[in-house]
Length: 337
Ligand SMILES: NC(=O)C1=CN([C@@H]2O[C@H](COP(=O)(O)OP(=O)(O)OC[C@H]3O[C@@H](n4cnc5c(N)ncnc54)[C@H](OP(=O)(O)O)[C@@H]3O)[C@@H](O)[C@H]2O)C=CC1
Ligand SMILES: O=C(CO)COP(=O)(O)O
Image 1 (cartoon, rainbow, N blue to C red):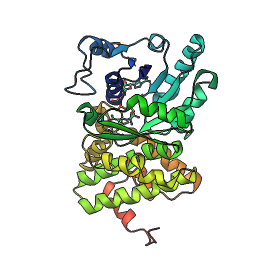
Image 2 (image 1 turned 90 degrees about the vertical axis):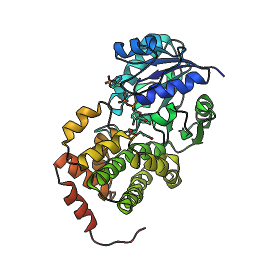
Image 3 (image 1 turned 135 degrees about the horizontal axis):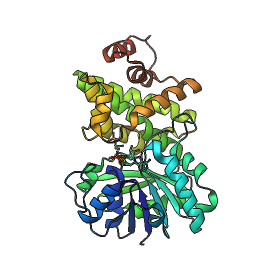
Image 4 (image 1 turned 45 degrees about the vertical axis):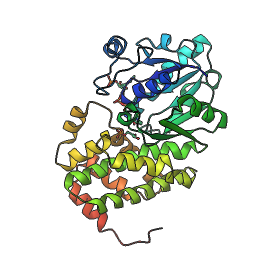
């Protein structure tokens, strides 16, 4: 099959996913709000700020005009940072209505909306009326853009309440190196994807502080326990958290210097100031805002999330990292399960 697909957001993940779709023979339109980036993509076929040493196929066309990018599309893939999803979806809704289109909606972003605590599929459903869309599918899993760019083996999940939509997305993306599973548990997949970034920040901080493998394994395991507690409180399937969007994504982000969240944590652990870390990253560090949303959600729902709380205190209340770790370790002893 060859589909017409708009990819919205030309950062590291959006541009590499666009490249996978292009390689699969789809007509791909990569949209960016930055005209300079569009010019670079169309003339040099590179996107150097976001993905180094990678040349895109000339068949991949970038657009700065959203309406042109959406012309006649069968599917739209949202890959903008969480904070931009609602505003971009609102613009998309107007255009789909004017053009009388009803595409499949996919997103590959990882976060929870601030204040509303909504999952990103919920935000898309709210902003884009049912008359102008089919089902929403989430594409998520352990997948650094840098590895996909090298065509290294990558396994992800397409999650949707519509089995047909999940299978459609699976078919769009499957290549010999990029394998896609389906999962009906969109709640678990989105919560796992968003919250693993908190654990990646923590794992980076442990590394920056010089802690060893035992501490990192402890953080990942107990971090996953609290993610699954929050997820199941929303009705997520506990099995999802031992799958690609749970343990899989924690392993990849909490052990790799490719992860922006891990790198941010590492720099904080080495004593750098948060503002400096954000400024020189130059790319989105989703875990910072997700820590706030997850902490507030855990309080609102009465779900115990001590690691998230400790990371919240470090990031938002200026608590010393070693003191936060020491307090976590000295909580009253309890049963593992
Ligand atoms: N990188 C990866 O390997 C993976 C990332 N993800 C997820 O994908 C999402 C995007 O991440 P990623 O591509 O890495 O992020 P990047 O920071 O690399 O890129 C984000 C892109 O979105 C653009 N952008 C920012 N705000 C807006 C806006 N309001 N409207 C339109 N475009 C906007 C940015 O432009 P500018 O910088 O000019 O503001 C940039 O081009 C995140 O949720 C991330 O967690 C998921 C899996 C893997
Ligand atoms: O989600 C990711 C890999 O699965 C990317 O993580 P970072 O945003 O930390 O780079």
